[in-house]
Image 1 (cartoon, one colour):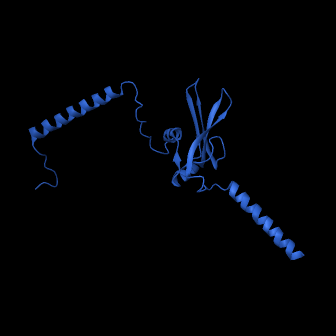
Image 2: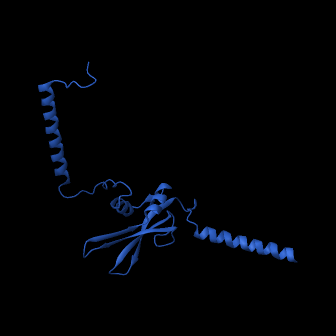
Length: 162
């Protein structure tokens, strides 16, 4: 009787341990998709903020997540953006190959963790094309000046010249 009780108790202990490990370990599951860094909306009506969380792609937006990585609180009245991040954990999740949402990319680039993302196709600011045209004209003028200087002085002989 004693050996049967200890075997069943051990089986109960192991099954509970496996459930706890599955629930609380920050590992992503292959059936729920790859890891993703995205924001969850939190706070009250006048004081909204966003929690940056690591979750699986298949997890619901306001549902479960693996780890909280920081917060982002933009205040509209004072135009101050408060960013709090756990840099080491963000680097860890980015190192595992986690992708970011668009807003997550912007916040991580503001904090200097990743390079700034390219602008979204089709979204242009006022005067964008005019600025591009001015830059192209300036480059053309500089190119012409360099060509004139080259033709006036000839090729510059450096260390490798014979």
